[in-house]
Structures are given as structure tokens and as C-alpha cells.
Image (tube, rainbow, N blue to C red; front, side, top):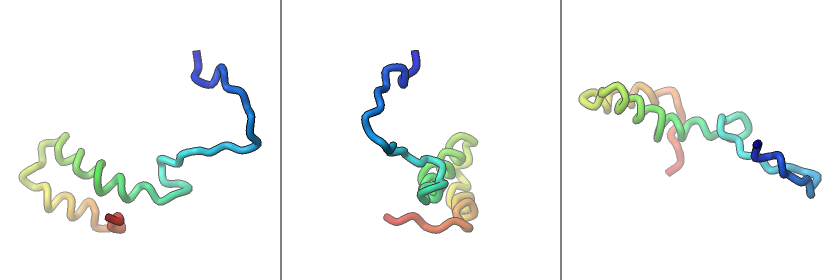
Length: 65
């Protein structure tokens, strides 16, 4: 059973969440706070964490704090 099977349209518009950065700039924050740190942890690169993340983040805009 699909989550949309019982959906009943009652508006002429939809509100959607953009998670891939196409409509909103959401990718930079993911790269800084998730993808890079998770890569370091997954591949057990902690001894080189700072150098790796500096290079990983070099061409990306810093996220707003």
C-alpha cells in the first residue's frame, strides 16, 4: 500500500521539500556537516581529518552558522 493511496486533493497547489539543492542551496551545508565528516569516519581517516575536510570544503561556500 502506497502512502498516497488514500490521498485526497483539497488544494490547487503542492508544497514540496527540495533535498538535492535544485531549488534551494542545500547541498553546501550537507557537504560541510554530513558528507565530508561521514567520509572521514567511514574510511577511518581521523588522523588526517583536518587536511581532508579542508580540501573537501575548499571549493564550497561556507555554510551560515
